Length: 252
Image (tube, rainbow, N blue to C red):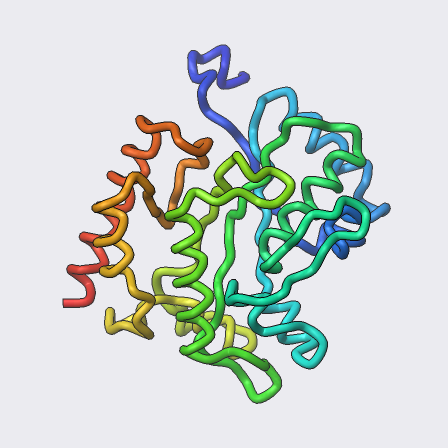
């Protein structure tokens, strides 16, 4: 039975997708879904459109950098100051890869004939350790990526394609997963180790102090509000303070 018939019309149902669903992602305006899944994606997008639910994407600029460290600017993927890139088809300027990835998904959705489906980031992060062939997996880069991302979340930033809509992002992850199989990087995305010691200092206490004296807010589980909507920003601040208290307790 549909949730709406049970009186739960405000519950949105979706599922995260890997960026691998895209056939093209560069430049963002060239974003398109792989032809072999176009039928499934059309049905999925039709459901999201009719239920007004968002499209969630797992987006990791780290993987792109790892595969081509000589061809991709580290500053570009870490949100550090850089010249960025201009999409030749839209003239939109991108100063980081995460926003470019998100907008590529938005363009892919539009090419399927759908409008108004919000794209949100269900996972993003950076590993603090990796194997010898996993370029860039260091505590310094992980701290820089997550710190810069959190600052942009606190500023309620949107992407170049949707600058007035705050991009909702979930940071992966709170803890390292020491029993997870695969490359070393897969076990080292956490802000904390399994023994609750800090992997690196991402500057959470500084960010919390800053947000306490401003109208902005920050959350690892943000609410995706539009910019300058005071009641929702207060709710995000409550979420953030709860998380900050938990992290303060864990860090001793």
